[in-house]
Length: 639
Image 1 (tube, rainbow, N blue to C red):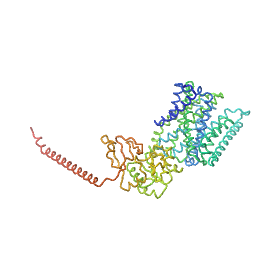
Image 2: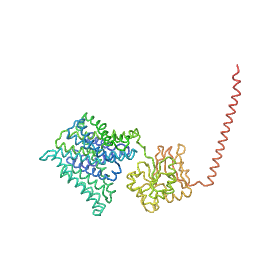
Image 3: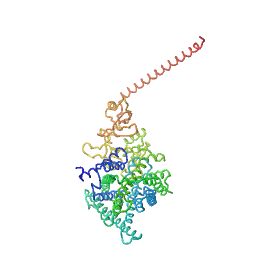
Image 4: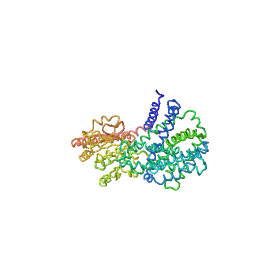
């Protein structure tokens, strides 16, 4: 049964997605775990052998997957966002790509000993810096926006550029026309690339014209888009091999910069599909590394990897950013960080298959060498980025702030209390009038709609560890949680309960604050009646169960501050784990006057008793010292 193709395909999906899940749980680079899983499933255990199991399907599967991955990369390239990323990104693209290509080709030829043809193609692919790796890496760091934007957008822009360079060089290498002169080859390759690019632009404009006008129903938009991407790739590939990569990339760029209804739904679909394809392709490629292929990783390849890390990338980045306004510390960090990812491996694997079939020497070395580049750059950059950022003084530490959406009396009071506990708090609202209260309380505020695209240019969501949505519009609260949930994490999004939640009204999209599901109107009313926030430290002698027993009637825990400073909200049906040395933040009613007077009187009595005890102790100590002083001369007399 395990030899069935259906079982093999299922195993590829299970292993790939499983490796991604383990990476998410452990915080390790997903691509490294997928590589390890693929090698174990392939060369070690022999469960998956792509050449044997997939046969002639291996190449078209990889090609179509790479096409969809590059389309999704083009779909991320919005020129407005690129403009906001600043001048450094343009420098890294316009200046860095040619320098990186030439230096990478030189390093592959001199260091790895590859032929100039293969070296030029491989050097073109290596300008790709792996957005699928850089994105997760940047989420674990808290760097200045300029550095993060430069690295992120360099990866997004260079993805299609690396593919275009590889396509052009492949066209030169495999050109079989009657005239093999430089001019003829150049014109032929440019013509084929131009036709493929025009096809992609035309398809992009067609989709952005058809979708908003209702010519395609909502439930068919994602399937139609996927089929158009595949069809465009295949048509261009029939005209000239591998030019389909140009088609899908430019189609994505056009769609990213033109209004399309259901853009968010389509983008989410493509991202989910890309994750699945990345997992599958990487398992297939890593499983294809048989022992014979891995033995082709020659010792001199280490020289190439050394040059790539310590010469090619640093020179490329520093020369590109020379004369820019970016501080030197930030330039040095960018000069060090350049991990390669799935796109580099997938494109290399695709062209390696083609070049081996063409009979080009050294083509068989591309696959093991590309895996070596990925592993070394991920280990070197992924595991050292935080330490390098700290050494350079640009690491702003883990984001520990709290974002509160909705300015009112209750959120202002809660924000002030969290600030007293040491948490940076930002209250966001579109009303200048509503923000007067938080401003008077010396809280950081952001005026504007949190859902506006321009917000990300002024508000760094990475600096917040929790987001509480508590405006007086329940539908708006749910919309914010649905929109920001995929970016921040749904487990970090909490909203106040809707007024008619018990009647099946507005469906929450985030966790509902408080076990009692009190609405923001109820919370404001209770605050006006004298309710307040308090804190209780959980100790070995005073457990969380004891805290629950002594909690005033109606009061309830609202959040817990863990020993490491992490903040978690109590939500309906989701209680955070509370342990020793944690601090529980409560929202409690005012203490009755009689109990308050009795408690104050008890405290006064305890204080008076403690004072009397201290005075008695001091008096006894003074008497003892006086007796010792009187006795001392007698002890000094001769015996």
